[in-house]
Length: 174
Image (cartoon, rainbow, N blue to C red; front, top):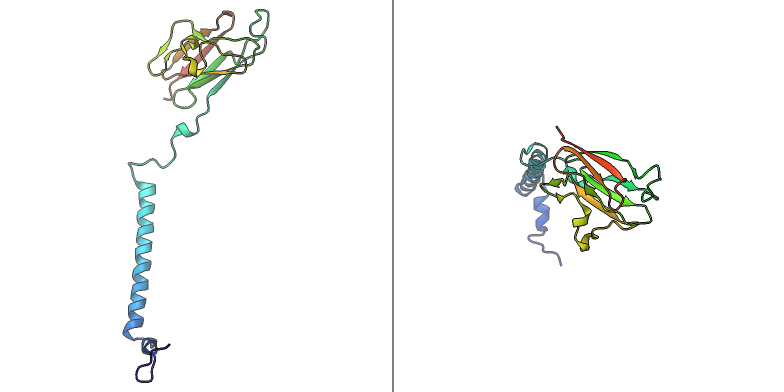
């Protein structure tokens, strides 16, 4: 049902260019466009120039541990190769977590030659690892991880296979 007043529909009066309702709608549209542009500029400024927020995601999301393989036959003293690599270099804050993977058919442990104790990670010795984290022994097919937070050279060996030896060189990022 259309509303007709004095023979004209009410919208017919608003459709003339220059009439107040058409100018009101045009001004409203310009105001909305201005607000959208201002909001986009404000958000863009906040994202790219805000000194309190990092622009990129933190490094920790992309960090992969350094891998050392305890090779099959490492428990045999006559085996020419025990671990690959035997010397691993890591960079603090980049790849300073090391993961040993036991590919041998017998359990191994990892222990620092100098009783190294990291201020964050604690003792570098798998024998002190809680059972819920795998226990003292790195069983065949299992892993052990340790995160180094200080630069330095850390020599280590395996028990009960002391001939299985390795070195971690932890470098500072600077």
